[in-house]
Length: 300
Image 1 (cartoon, rainbow, N blue to C red):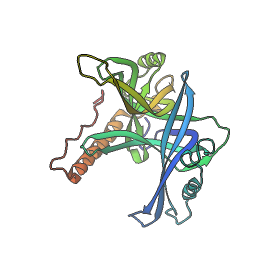
Image 2 (cartoon, rainbow, N blue to C red):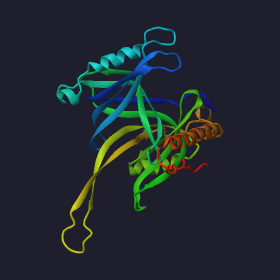
Image 3 (cartoon, rainbow, N blue to C red):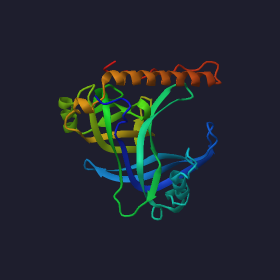
Image 4 (cartoon, rainbow, N blue to C red):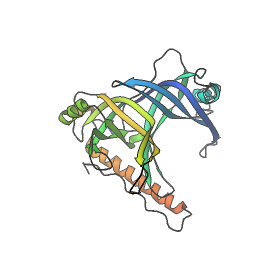
C-alpha cells in the first residue's frame, strides 16, 4: 500500500482579480531569519454546473528572506511583487490586476473561538502569485483523499438537502493528516458515488472552491396580528464542491492503509485536544466554555 509518508496529490488553481492584500513581517524564533507574510483575496467569477458564481478566495503566502542555505528566497521576492499589484480595493475592478495562483495547496485550519468552541476549516497556501491576462476565472482543486465518512446532508430541521458530505483525509508533509469536508451537489454524482465509493477507499476528487455570502430571510414579528417583516442576515459559505473524480477507488498499491491513517488521525486528535487545553488556559473568563469534541467518523 501507499506509505503514509508520501504526501497526497494536493493542487489548487485560482485565477481572478486581486481584491485586497494585507502584509506582516517578523523573525523566526528558531534561527532569527527575517520573514514576510501576506493574506490576499482573489475575486473569481466562474461558471460550472450551469450556474455563474462569484467567490472571494482568501490565500496566504509566507516566505523567509533567505533559505536555510543562506541563499535568496524567490518566494520572498514574489511577496515584494505582490505589494506593487493593483487591487480592486485601491484601484477599482477595471484597473485591478488579474492574477494566477500557482503551486498552491490546501490544508486544514483549526482554532478555538473566544467562547471555547472548536472551529474547523481550511486555508489555501501558496509560494507564488503572478499577474496574468486573458485567462478564464477559476477556483478549483485536484486532491487525493482517503474517505473517512460519506453521509447525506440535512438542513437545520433535519430534512435531506439532496447533497452528500464526504470527509476526506489528506496526507500532508511528514505523514500529518488533515481532514477536509467536501460537498457533492449533483444528484447524478451523488448516486454514482453511493454505488462506487466506500469508506476506507482512496480516491481522487476535483471540483470548485466556493467562498461566498448567502442572504437568509426570516419573519421577525411575534405578534398575533399584522405584517411579518422579514429580518435579513448574511451567512458566509466556504465549501469544496466535488464536480468530478476517479471512476473507481485506487488500486491497493496506490491506496493508503487504513491502519496508518488511523494512527495519523489519533495524532491529529491529540493535537486538537491540546489546542483546546491551551485556549482554555489562556481564557480571561472565570470559567472557559467547554470546547466542542472532535467530529466522529463512521469508521471509528
